Image (cartoon, rainbow, N blue to C red; front, side, top):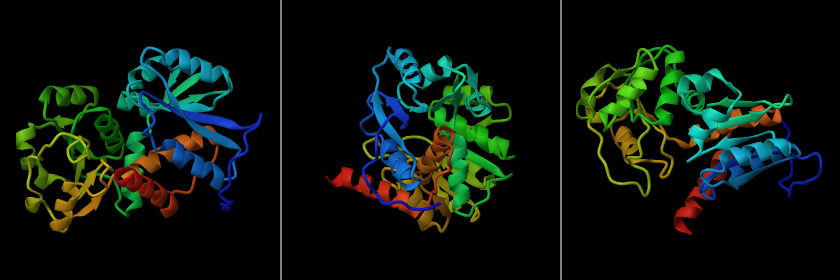
Length: 292
């Protein structure tokens, strides 16, 4: 893939359009990332933030579809609405029970995808860690946890879920056959038999309420890989603890990038190069937002 000069994009009648719908949406790094790739791939396209109030989602989506957009990413609080509006659910969305990517087809249909789970796996594997078989302990039971659990199961990984509210973990397990549940307080007891630990909760996220994990990584098997989907800060307390114990660990910024790359390909027909340049771009922007 040839690199191009980083210049302002030309907007004309042939420009391919996509964006991200949310409320609020100003914080999203998706426009920065996608427009970087569009320039680098020399694609006449633009990716824009789309602030859409609750209750106006379907009207906005139908309007974007009629205006010729290729599709959109969907973020809080519209993911449930996105699941209901689609004409066809991809298997990724059916398995995860969520939609974060809409594709508007030339035939006038809306297709729904979930890229979180496969983006997570792609990020782990990009760190040289194969995801196949073994057992994973997931902390949390929200939409991201279900998407990740589904993608892990598709690769032969047994999944255990622990959530601070056990009922939510039970709901996740009921939607994905084979997932088992352990109490949050006793999650540490399951760790010795696991090859992967994944935090999908907000514990450790900058600005989130304080919390603690119910385990001591010093007791984990040395082969355990510790992952955190939080990326602000990149090195969370959990990852610092993993490093102190000599465990391999993976932060969440790569998941953000890889899941975005999957959507980019669906809209623009090109797989973007996922390398250190886009990671450095996002890292610098995140740092500037914290210190500015």
